[in-house]
Image (cartoon, rainbow, N blue to C red; front, side):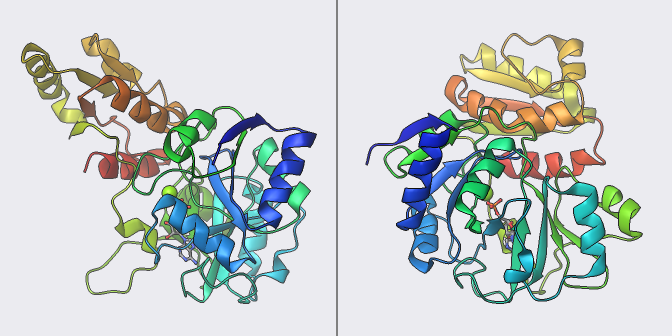
Length: 329
Ligand code: AMP
Ligand code: MG
C-alpha cells in the first residue's frame, strides 16, 4: 500500500472520509501527538488499528469527537463536574472516561464498561472530525512501544505501507499524550498525567485524585502498564542531582568511540555545553513539546543517549517525567 502525506484541505478531507467509510485508518494531527483514527462504530476497522500498530488487545482506545458532537449518544452518566471541566479545558488535551452506552465497537474499550472521550483543539483535527461527524477511535500513530509521533514524517517512518493517508498538520504543539481522567466516580481521578494537571483540575472542581497503581489491584488504565515511548538506541537517565556524573559518563562514552548524545534542558546545557546535544528547551511546556521529537532525532544520530532529568518535577513535569522514565526503561 502506498502511504500519502497530504496537507489538510478539501481534497484530502474527502479522501479521508472515503477511507474511513470503507473501514480504513487515517493518521491525523492533534495538539498532543498524531493519532491513527478509525470509525469507532466499525468493529473490523477498530480491530485493524490494533493490528497496524501491533498494540496489545487489552489497551483501550480514546474516542475523538469534534467540539459540537453530542456525547450523550455514546455515554450514559455525565457528572456535573465534567461539564465544568469541559468548559475550562475543552477543546484541549484532556480525555475524560465515562460510563459507556456500549454504542461504539466493544474493541474500543477492550471489554471495559467505560469509554474515554477527547475533543482535540488542533484546527486540523477539528476539521477532520467535523467533516466525518463520527466518533473516531484513535491511539497514537506509532508502532506500539515506540516513541509517539509529533510530526507527519514520524508517522510515515513508523507506518509507511500500513496506512493509506497521513494528514499533515505540522509539528504538534503539546508534545505528550492527553491527560486521562476517570470521571466515573464522585471525584475525578487522573489515570495518566499530561498537560492538564491534577492541580488545574482541582482548581475548577475542588478536588482531584491521582491514581497510583497498587499491587494486586485491577489496573484502571491498562495502557500504563506497558513499556512505552522507547527510542531504537541505548539510553541512560540520570537524576538532576547527578548531572555532573552524567556529563562524565557522556565524555567517557565519546572517548570509547561511541556516538553518545547528551539530552537535557537548556539550563543544564549551559552548565556543560556538550557538543552532541539534544536540547529539550527552557521551560516545562517546551520540554513537553520537544521530548518525543528529540528522542526520535536521538535514535537517528546516536547509539546511546545520556539524559538528565530537569530540576523541576511538579505540574506538567509529572507527565513529562512519567514518559521520560518509561522511555529510558
Ligand atoms: P494512547 O491512545 O496510545 O495514548 O493510549 C490511550 C490511553 O488511554 C491508554 O493509557 C489507555 O489505558 C487509556 N484509556 C483508554 N480508554 C480507557 C478507559 N475506558 N478507561 C481507562 N483508561 C482508558
Ligand atoms: Mg500510544
